[in-house]
Length: 202
Image (tube, rainbow, N blue to C red; front, side):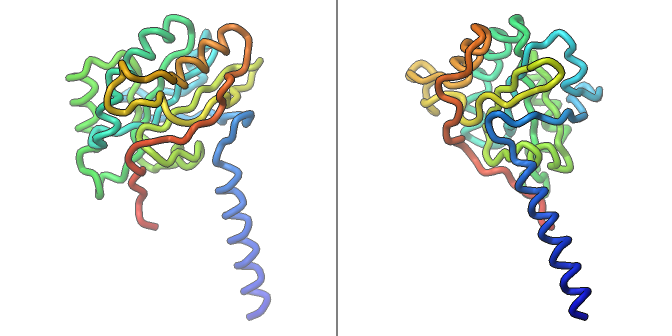
């Protein structure tokens, strides 16, 4: 019995260690993933062979804060997609808790809002856990370094939830501008704001 308990403890410890390791920090190398886009096609980071990096944003149809950032996320893609730093948006909420974040609702949102970026469905929540995302929106700026994709910024998009025009700190935009100049972001980490991701019950 003691042996079985010891083995179970070791397995649990390894699982928890893996979970902690999966939460990216600035400087970590990102593993590729494959998720379904709202056009029903699978998307992976490796498909973007000419990209210099990515702006990965975990977001939501139903979160009031995420809704306020919809146009700003679109603007980021319009500005930086042409400079080889496209937006990849991901929805990871448990639809049992938030039915408004179902794949069908994501499709409606992408169409009505005219999204020019992929809006991917993380049904298993594995990618959100891999990144360590906690909020909607929660942004990650990733830059290619040779064959690797390295996290350069984690946190909020800017410092003004209610009014984009009042944001005097545009964290994601500033991070990408720095990377395009060959420099690391001056502010690599900020606190993500918004609704907490709704996790599935284990």
